Length: 169
Image (cartoon, rainbow, N blue to C red; front, side, top):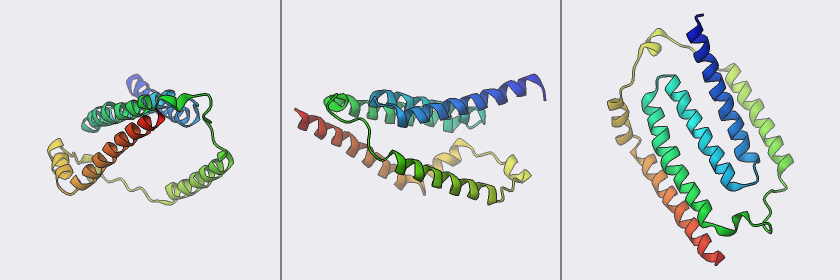
């Protein structure tokens, strides 16, 4: 293995480690704004992984849609809710042990599924290239309904944040 391939491999693994650390920080930090920033770091690391695997369109879509639009919406919702970081509001819950048990069950089930599933990789599958035109036709054809549903959910979340912020006053 030449030096460039080794550097690229360690870079990809480093990016995956960064995404994992930031994802853990998303669910463990007590400050909601800091958790949102860590979520943005996870999304950017995911886009970097897409770019490393030559999925340029997915990397660009990840940055524009998730980091750009969704994170802006989340940050606005956090900023509109003034008293969310107040000292009088509990920042943790009592479900730590239940969440840990659920996580362990999920990891065991997921591990069994991953290790028992055959993953055939053929030369035809490796040689196939999906163009941006084909992706665009798929997004505006059979997958247009999920995108419309997501836009309605995001608008509802923004309106919900505004209603919650108005009630606090």
